[in-house]
Image 1 (cartoon, helix red, strand yellow):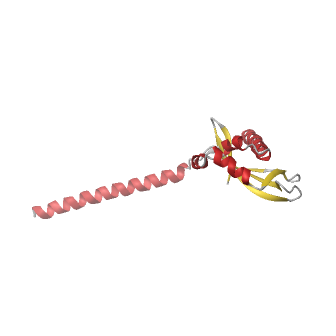
Image 2 (spheres, helix red, strand yellow):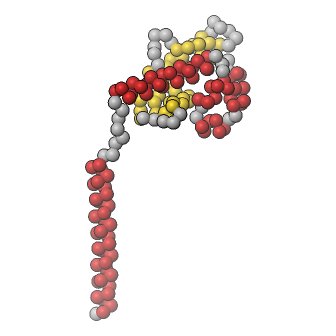
Image 3 (cartoon, helix red, strand yellow):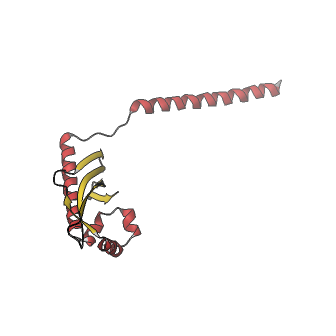
Length: 159
């Protein structure tokens, strides 16, 4: 009798712990679904300022690329890329390319897509010309990922 009573008490204790954990799980699930912790979206003025800042940085980035100033262009690379390749290797590879950008397609302005406060995309139609044969040109639609950092502004890298 004592053995059965001990087993019954043990079973009840296990069931109590299980029901407590189950209740806790449902409470957490309910409050996480209800709370809907969503980051504040920027106001139209903030969004315009972010897009203007991104546009200026992108124009600087494109100008350095057009002028073939690759040592200065290196700072626009993402950290993972700059850890993998030195500034000298980057400049050497860029010099070896046959095509350089002439500028943006005149009738199409770059489109800036806001994703998050720290993530934007610049979609632009860029006109390229051949380095040795200036008559050869083509237009390519490219997307550039822009990472905004509060302390250092916008950094851009090609994706």
